[in-house]
Length: 123
Image (cartoon, rainbow, N blue to C red; front, side, top):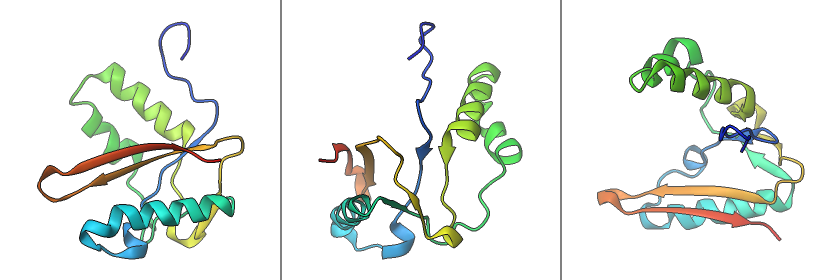
């Protein structure tokens, strides 16, 4: 956080999804993705998002959706996405795990509103 209360990341955040690699194993998918993330982290890797070949254009697709909130917030969010996030494309297969980052955040959204979020620290 800055003195003005704004979030300023110290390093880039990697955003990925493993569902395309694994398919949907219903109740086991969250645990399977967690195990795969732990294994990849031990190898110093973040896996790419399977089938992500050309993400949406920030200006053409993302910004208009963010503007439903307000222009100032939309601009700040777009700036964070463009400058502080990495989306590993399918062709990359993986990217290096961010240096000096022992954490990862995992979301699992299940049928009927069964949702879980974990923030884990690697040892």
